[in-house]
Structure formats: structure tokens, C-alpha cells
Length: 119
Ligand SMILES: Nc1ncnc2c1ncn2[C@@H]1O[C@H](COP(=O)(O)OP(=O)(O)OP(=O)(O)O)[C@@H](O)[C@H]1O
Ligand SMILES: [Mg+2]
Image (cartoon, rainbow, N blue to C red; front, side, top):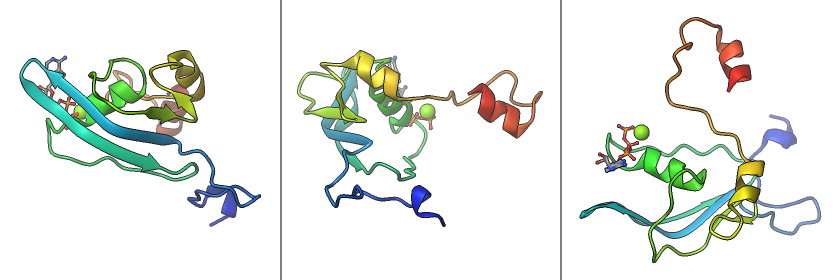
């Protein structure tokens, strides 16, 4: 595998690169239902990360928060996306990311490559 696609947390100069995603104590409740109960993540730049869990575990909620679509609850610690502070610089986060939906009405009508390009 070429080094450009190898997961790495270090830059060429040996310094650690900023995490693609880092969260400290990410929290979210809906009413009295706690969905995210203090999630700590450190996803290195250049890596591929899969967030797995049973239906209703809170995966989509986490992605919505990390992509600025839903706010995290008070008590959540620092959250950075591509070096941008989610709370202080949501526009910076939006400029740095791409998000694809779980379902698309045209999934079955176009090719896999066309779906990737569309997203
Ligand atoms: N806007 C909302 N209002 C109230 N409850 C919500 C809301 N969004 C999600 N929930 C609840 O939060 C919990 C987590 O939902 P979420 O969609 O994040 O789970 P998921 O891990 O993505 O599930 P799935 O594997 O089915 O996609 C579920 O109990 C869901 O009903
Ligand atoms: Mg989901």
C-alpha cells in the first residue's frame, strides 16, 4: 500500500499530525434518554475508521454532531475536526469535511462510481 494512504499519526517532520477527529466526553441525550454517554475518540489523520454498534446505539447521532448538524450536550469536552473546534468554529469544520447520507433515492439507479461522485 502506498505510504500516502497508510494510516499515520505523524507528519514527515516527525511531529504528530492533528487528529482528523478528536472528542472528549461527547454527550447527547434526547429527553431522559442518554444516547451518547461520554465518548472519547482519537482518529488519526489519514486513517480509515469504522464506528460500529447495534441499531439505536447512537452512531448517526454522533455523525450528526461531528458534522455540525446537531449540537452536543453541555458537559461535552473539546471536540476538534481537522483541527477546527466544533463549538467555536463550526464553519471551519463544515469547510473541512464531506458527509454522505446512509440512503439515497438514486442508489439503485446509478453506478457505484456515480454514487461516489455524487456524494
Ligand atoms: N431527534 C431525536 N429525538 C429523539 N430521539 C432520537 C432522535 N434521534 C435519535 N434518537 C434516538 O437516539 C437513539 C440513537 O439513534 P441513532 O439514530 O443515533 O442510532 P444508530 O446507531 O445510528 O442506529 P441505526 O443503526 O439504526 O442507524 C435511538 O434510540 C433513537 O431513537
Ligand atoms: Mg444510524
